[in-house]
Image (cartoon, rainbow, N blue to C red; front, side, top):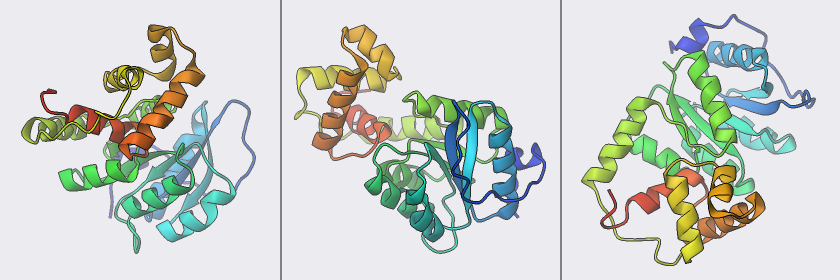
Length: 235
């Protein structure tokens, strides 16, 4: 049986179905997780937080792919090890339909290959299930602000990967302005902070980022930063 701090710190609840109402000012969240206890605990945590509202929970990838497009959330919490289709494949399918969707992987796996497959599929962040409820809520807030939250253990693996495996520059196709924006993204700045720093508006930043994604053939901020950091000579 899966164990995690989120489940241990939340009371049990009846699984939420497709609730289309969204309380004012609250971000919509969906959960894809095959463990019913974890699903229920996450839903309780999310609905008890001031800035979030759980609009649906799904026990497998197939159900999520079929039903999520009827009522898109702002964030999806995604397990990797699902019964049939994996969470990674589910991310890729949903991101193809809605590129702006934020997906946080929430899993027990800390395997480097799974981490990078998830990021390549379009995940915006990667957390382990041992994360505390406060860490999870903070990560959800962070991703809505344009961040790419990762558990410290995961972030360390990413750093080691970059240090051990340099690659050719894939950003040579970018304009000077696009490279400036990507540089700031890699430093962890949010869209508004980049706009202020470069004296442009947020809409312009978003337009440049869209072009960056197209040129680098990526679907998320994290994947774009991965390609930026793997350039020759970049530490």
